[in-house]
Image (cartoon, rainbow, N blue to C red; front, top):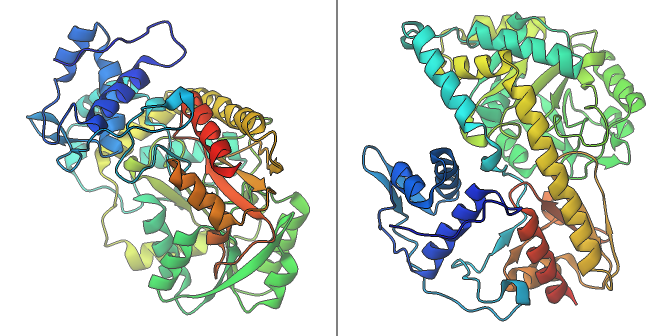
Length: 465
């Protein structure tokens, strides 16, 4: 039986202490590949903690690939993770910490959220209620646009929190942003030319390319995508992240939004695709209203998912389509089934209806704001002797770090990797990749605890000094 000393009065949550302890045993070889872990009930009883704490720790290990789950058998250490212990001669606070095989102790990736924030107990309770209330309907086919209960709750949420007044009849539920973007391209047409923000989300470029659509990467300025570049292009549709650009963090002001809307209205059949991917996480003020709030001509296709706000694994997103495009969808694609299971849709609808989503966002926002503050403080402290500048973003789950210590971006990345910290260069988000005028790193902090942030910052000082 696994036995660990967990500090119930410490700053680090119990689930995280347990997660890190099990992960350390796996990476040091104490728990070998294929070894079975105790059941949640057994481990909770042995450590005198709640089963929810064990469940949350196991869920994090499962999400990161350290363990696997076998139905009706339990949890097992990933077979490929039999790794010998490694000694590090680095910062004193993390000396002798075992390193993964790729030498990455800390990863500032941006496509992750903290699974520990997920409201497992509430979700489980609502799931049981849904099974009881909707038992018969869960086995029947759902409207191709999604369960009406969920679309009604999304319409309410958009009205109350994003300023978008829309009927549930204009909302389409789909299995994540990739699927929804493929669907938008089918609705608008592959023969179009699509303008994309440059820099931007590289996976998006791949989605458009795979779909056979022509792409025009357009430059940005301090207000977002440049309207003059859009007018000068041959694009008839443009993809934007106006509320919080990825990765620059720019918030598009109202004047620029109106310019883009005027471009869309200046010719027939022009559209704006608005991706509102992390609008919930704004720390200094209320979330910025969506660009779709200003649309009066039916030219904005609004896209959002619950990947950042809840969990990527849910694979639930939605579109808000103008009347003409929704009519086209009904005519061309109504023969297809909804791509999200009824059970998950009804559970999410109940989560929204009972106020659970707003409470979850409020709690998560506090967690991520504390991590953002911890990262800025740690970088300022550890890099005090190195010229640097931070974006100090008031929104989102990442920030930009500009280094002026004479090292090019690639060298900064490689030196960080050598000490076990993975960071990402801004150059890779350009199409084609470019060498920015100054070395800039994109640091996502959602997946790291405050202690891990402190330790990673100390290693970056060591790498870049």
